[in-house]
Image (cartoon, rainbow, N blue to C red; front, side, top):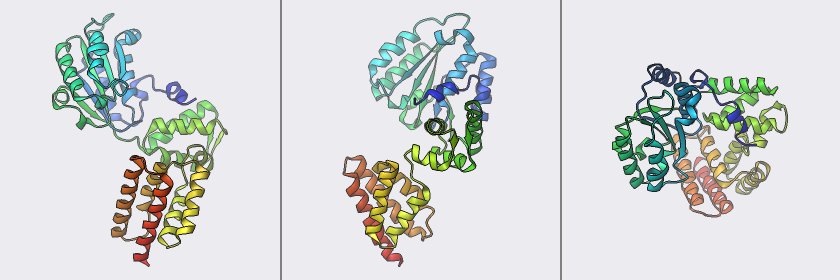
Length: 319
């Protein structure tokens, strides 16, 4: 079921793309002049990079867009083989119909190895006359300078709250859903600017009930309520380690959270605590250390208990 609504409600034109008016205006200018440079779309996941590339191709090429456009994911094949194989084979063929060039969209291009990027640079140089490249990256700094200098860079920021709500209302109207005010706020809180995640959250909630409430979304998205996480932290800071430990396991069982999920929510909640900034700094430092251990494969329960113990010690300095 996942991603069904993402494709179903993907924008069909540049005007329908949410949240990036200035970028869209520049892309529309490229469509008008039929002249597109090599592009680099940089930004976090779910902010419209892939969608913008697809609708740009559709508006440029019309009915022939699928014959003059190819989408490849560099995270699937990171080595030089994908450049010498699929990319080069598509780039060397002439565009079809009345198109002056073809477009290769390389998603997650920052996953390419250094050798693959060097080979890609030579391919870009050789086939610029009949082929344009659009690179989608999370971190533009991971792309070698010779490629960056050949691309016009567009930086996609997280989608703003108003744009997410507007898009959710559009989907809710089409699917006959009722989203409560706290439901909208919860979608915004959980997605944090990731429109793709927001759509998936709404779709998952809608599979359970047509009325989308905050309670439903927290239960179906494996996300703890912020107030529950804040209570957990305050209990630990208050020196009641065993009570905090019990609250932790209640969260893990009730919401089905992983260790990394808990750490992320604890990190978010630390900034809202009524404690001195110096204490917040130390708590964040401890949370960062525990997250690193979890990523390295340490036992989640032991590490989270260790974090609560450290919070209790920090709370002792405040009492």
